[in-house]
Length: 246
Image 1: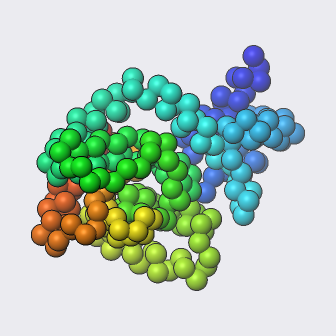
Image 2: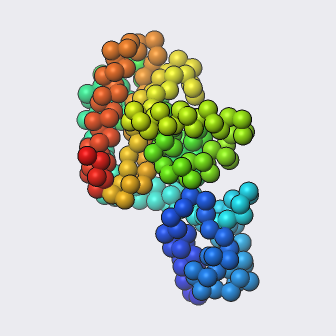
């Protein structure tokens, strides 16, 4: 039982750490009031179980995505979903397209929910649970653009060579300014996507809402309409989660 208590103490310390770069073993040891030798053994065991991850570059520690995967098992009972799903269904009806909810998981994003159009027989179909690198696609870029620069930079440094970092940072600044992201054939040829980030009551990015469409039917007027509806939905969802987005 002592090991479980210690592991949960470490998990809580990592969960409440505010920067995206993780925390060093020495700082973690002090925060949890455990000897370095004990902390080293505990972290090694937690890494093996997927509960903790270590950044290869900084050697700092952060929570592993196993916590999110466990959370998915009780997904339908979460108040978070009860608040968001009606808005996704409403958006899908309004735009007559497939609508997605994604959540960040380290350097990837996981598709958490998909609402398919009842009338549109030509649709984009991405499986629930699909993991996508965070630098790819409108939904992921919308999330990156609204994260703290330290957190987004840490993610991008894992995914891209140095020479590609500055161009994508410029793109993210533009996305942040305009309030939405678009993607055309970036992950799947012949498809486009419009996305907005979802933030919670403390301003943390908790996900993204996106609309997937086939590109051949996408006119400028249609794109403007999708952007408008995505922004409206993102604002309503963020408001429901306690965000002061006004």
